[in-house]
Structures are given as structure tokens and as C-alpha cells.
Image 1 (cartoon, helix red, strand yellow):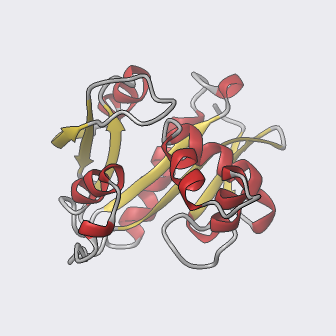
Image 2 (cartoon, rainbow, N blue to C red):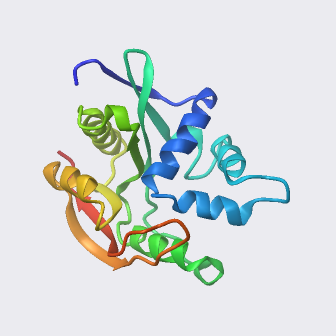
Length: 195
């Protein structure tokens, strides 16, 4: 798609960002946000507040927005996985977060694509591929070892995209069903060298 513009996210993008995070996480973020909600607060509000932070993996500063004809079409959240991942708080994490954290820890020093999502009307038009290419450039510029992403094994369109762009399976952990999630299979850690 020749007319895709990729730009850094701003605070004004957080509403779209929350939607993309939940799409990419297949509803798991909403599940987490619901657990964190205070009385009278909904999951979306929790997600929005988290995206508005200046620090943290899921913060607007780690996000990029793809636009098509001036409209938001997709998003990317990425960052470098530490060389020494701190696993000291594993016992306090939910089982869902623990398994994903353990997979992420298997790719130290890699540039991690935490979120890659597009609105349905832009799928199949090259937006996700453009975002992946941008993530690869960011990772190379940051001096990372390579790229990493975690995907649900039964998410066939995503698995095909990552395979086509050079990602290969490194590890997997059983996917534990959570409310609202209908897939089975595994969470799969995919990695690739920089292109």
C-alpha cells in the first residue's frame, strides 16, 4: 500500500491505541484491565489510563500509528527486551501474564513487537506489512539482536504474515483460555534476524 504513512503515536491516539492493543491481544488486555478496574471504572478506561502513561511497555511513547488517506488504519507497539529480563515477580502474576512473560524472556536483546493490529477495513492491504517493516528498522537502529513477536498458534492470518516476513518459531507455551476467548492452541514466540 503506497499511501501508508507511519508516524509516532501521540497522546491524542490513545483511544485508537487501546482498541488496537485489545485486538492484537485477542481480548486478553480487556480481561487484565477488568481485573485492575476500581469500582465504577470500566476496562476500557483502565486501558486508556495505562496508554496515557509516559513509561511502561504499553505506553503511547512506544507506539506507532499507520494512517491511510489521513485516517488511522493500524498500530504498532514495540520496544527492546532487556538483556536480563527480571522474573522476580512471576509468582505474583496471573497465569496468563506469567506464560507470556516467560516467552518474552526467551528473546533477550530482541526488538519486541508487542502489538500489531489494523482495523478490519484495512486488512489485506499491506498496512500490517508496512508496520512490520518499520518495526524491523526501529530494531536495527536500536542495535537489537533481532525481532521477536508472540502470536496465538490458531491465529492463522497472523501466523501466515509472520512466516511470510521471515519469523520462525523459537518456543511455545500452552494457551490458557480466559473469559471471551474461544481459541485453543499455544502462545508461540517467533523470532527473526534483522532484514
